[in-house]
Image 1 (spheres, rainbow, N blue to C red):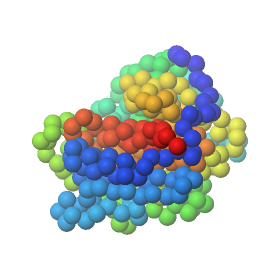
Image 2: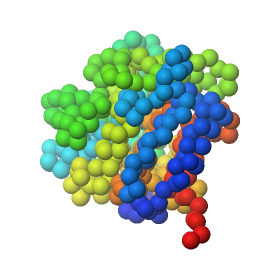
Image 3: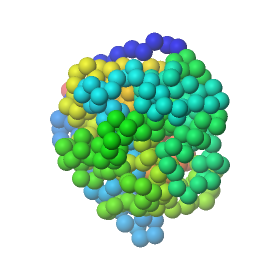
Length: 371
């Protein structure tokens, strides 16, 4: 496997920024050509804050999307979980080199899985080889409610994707196990640890991990629309606003806002949530495979190299009815948060990531103007 490497610089500059009319036209295209229900973007840099929107939060009422609304953030949850783990490492309550078996004895076994050979670090950077339980939808959908143990058991019914450390493969099971380790180390619920260590200190009033199988989104929110991953332009659209989220939990169950994501990722990228040593480990990345193109992955954090060559840092999230991106410069001083309350994009994009890439390209690689 390619050796992990630290990445500490980005070619994008905090002073950069697209003309806001350019960004607004991209949002309008996403709705008009892409057919997404609604889209929001919030940009923050040394020029200030800008919020833009197009489309609607509710296709029945025509209600517009707003800065305060909450939405499901999918795999950006992983960044919160990794941050908690690294704080526990800094407190010497565990080590990234501890194996899964040391904290969850016997949980990762069967069909070739060996928890004694998989470190916590390999969980966080997706080099464990553990089967991704969401790749077995019939089994996941068999149950109305999902415990972390059940999700891991679904994964254990399949052989690993590769031997630990031999390759890279995105697996939601890794972060279910990471969440279970947090609870074993602290003796408290993962949701409580995220609240105590991150959301309350940073004042993230719109961010939380739902407890149990709560299907609702607390507070103001857009409707979440899904085509259930059907790529056909005329595929039936379903309302997934109320979603039994225990099937995602530590891998993708959290809810947040554009402003809260700015504050969290800005603090994290700026080195204000974990000490320097753990911060460096977090940003030591490995190349990805069969994931988002032109990316590397650290410990719950990823980099994207844009077509212009600029590198931005953050994390995205995809869940039924809501796709989001939070990326910015390595120092966290120039950040973009985008969310679409749908999980498709027609026309030239193919999916919302195509839209997000165009937005990031416009923001971090604006054309040079002649003085």
